[in-house]
Image (cartoon, rainbow, N blue to C red):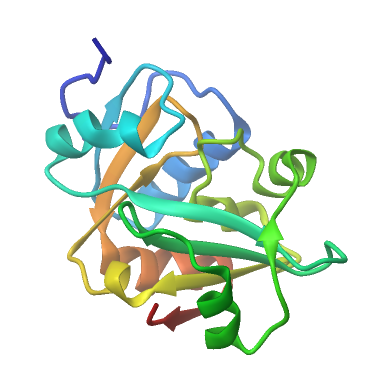
Length: 179
C-alpha cells in the first residue's frame, strides 16, 4: 500500500534538498498557509491518487519542455487528467515545436528529480530561464496541489497564493493558455 502521512501544516523536520528548504523558507516568509503530506516516492500521476484524496484536491501535472536547441524552457502546469497536446500548446504560445527536456537539464535547471517537477523550481531560477505557462483549468481552481521539490513531499496551497505571491516573489511572469 502506498504510504501517505496525516496532514501537517508545519515544515519538515529535515530537508532532502536545497530546493525543498527554499520552498518552506519562502512560504514562511510570505506567510502562505499550506497543508502537506509525506509519502512513499511518487513518480506518476497514478501515485498521486491517494495524495489527492488525503489533501482533498487534485495534484497538478507539471511538464518541463524545451525548444529544439534547448535554449528556451517552459514549465507547463496543467490538470492531472489532461493529455498533453504539443500542437495546441505551441499554437497558443505562437512558438515552434517543443519536446520534453532531457533528464540532465531537468535536474540541473529544476533542481529536482523526474517526478517532482514543481512551480517552486522558479525560486532558484534567478536568470528567468523558465517560462511558466498555466492551463486555464488550473488557474480556475481554488487549490493547487504539487510537489515540494521532492518525490516524497506534496502540498496544497491556494492557487491565488501561487499566482499572486510565489511567482511575483520569484520575479517570474506567467501566461495562462486555454487548451
